[in-house]
Amino acid sequence: MKSLIKFAALALVGTAVLAAPAFAALKEGTQAPDFTAPAYLAGKPFTFKLSDALKQGPVVVYFFPAAHTSGCNIEAHLFSQAIDQFKALHATVIGVTAGHTGELADFSKETEHCSGKFPVAADEGAKIAKEYDALLVMRPGWSDRTSYVIAPSGTITHVYSDLSPEKHVQETLDAVKAIENTK
Picture (cartoon, rainbow, N blue to C red):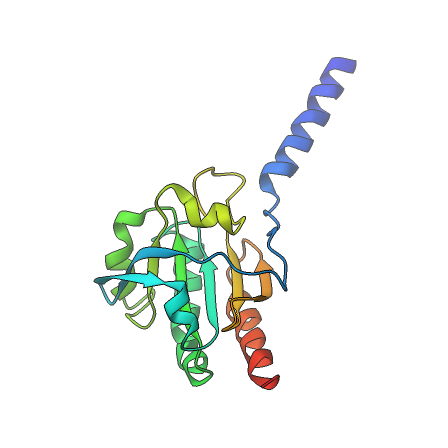
């Protein structure tokens, strides 16, 4: 009986650890790691460079697990709907994923997802996600759902990590507005 209770307790702890979202280790006030990645905008390939984007204004780097999955579809659609608000604040939005990277060209142009309004970048081997501590605990090698707002200086001003896609847009938009209000 004791071994059954121990097994149940271990199983419960293991389930809780795997189900819990990863908490981003990069904190507000730290320098964002620079990166360059293959990306797509409206189905067209290009190379995204964080350092170049920061010259234009704040950058929202949102990590998502994989293209063409339910939560990621919702999140991309929500960012697509709000993209004009980000652009009005001179902010760049880039989605980054290590999952289903071969599908990003289509994902970037489909109406129900990005609608060709903002780019998505391929993170082969989850190298960028590792630098940003945005790895999905329950699916090694895939990105977690973590969003960073980076000021033009390269400093991280906001971090939001939650597997639910619903609040990432409002969290990051409010953080970009806060940067604008400090000018």
